[in-house]
Image (cartoon, rainbow, N blue to C red):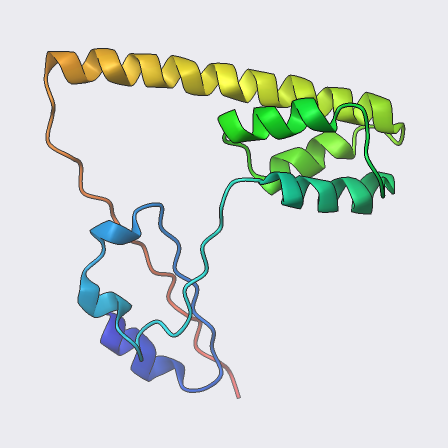
Length: 144
């Protein structure tokens, strides 16, 4: 299927594949010539957060909430987009960063609850893993 997709695209297309489970993909799909670039999109790190805070709130130095935020970022899974959304809610740095702290605490709590649920589920029965489906978007035929 992918071979047909590649041969029909020529040199004019960029095809983006996304997955949360790269390890489950067929190695032939990942070989050079098929996928030339692999980009890992991680959760927000403290360095990433500082850059966002600088861009959205013009905070260049240290802020009193940075210690709390750094500790929470180590325990919570939150995307840079979620952090940016929270930072845009107020131009007041204190208000915006307090919102980030609340977001991170909520995400940490959700993660803890999911972890607890996962532990309980694993004690019952370990069901077989579901296969992940990789969907391709077919390029439109160009009209020339």
